Length: 414
Image (cartoon, rainbow, N blue to C red; front, side, top):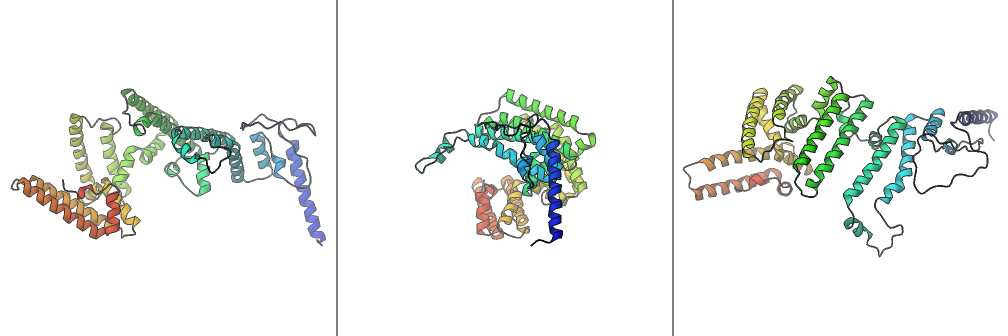
């Protein structure tokens, strides 16, 4: 039997709940339907109603139910949740889950799966081969954009960021745009994703269909890049734009790639970045045609000059590490030693073998005292010795993985 104190407490709790629900009912937007009025028939097409619909009122009892807060008007629904003190993060989770459920039939309809699958149906093979998967992906992205716009309007938050947060992840944009206020961070990432999508629609035929880009395609890409830069300039302050370039520009990414494994300081990064930025402004990698022999020759001379400037800025030893970081082979060697739990320095040892082999090979190829058969034999023996040396450093399994990755071509005699 409950004590009088507990019974009194329960009565007060029920009274408080009745007052809260009564407040929600009395402050609801729009007029309530008459008691006993029929519920409108459900349609097959899910609707997203943000505002303007009258809420459905549930009969109030002394027991609380989420149904008491339901409304076809999302704004009214959110207002009711806030009115009873529901935490903002919980409101976000509820509305996002509700929106996912609402649009799930549209997502499912993209793929054309049979409603009743039997074991004699070859549905998986048909879905794999008889449909344009890129068209599916475009439809998925369109629905995702719709969800994102609705959540941004209702809650003022980015759906992508919320989902990453729920999984415990920080994505590429979130980590690199953290210097911006949250609202502008969302604006920037949505702007970037918009232009990425527009550019992909143009480059898709080259990457997926093997068709070369036309002059019109290239002109359109240049136009999109210029539009993106203009919108970014209008959106960011000068200080924010400077930070954006340090985090997001192709120049900064190229410098970070080359500084791999160096534990570079901020001063070293900025020194290389300034030199590389000047080079890239003159030799834009997205616009220069290096298939043209004259352009290639000029580019090589300019790149050698850039290397000389970087060497002067970093010093000889750090420059050697910088050039090592520019080489994709060194990145793959590090990935290989990680995969096979080898000591980190093994990657550097293997790379030193490559460096020595290339230097020696260059001298042999330029030695006028050697006949052509002697030169070929020397190069063949050198390649065999280098291969054995790398095997000893990495071990047979790691070496096999490294060569199967498509790297290690330097081990083959020319």
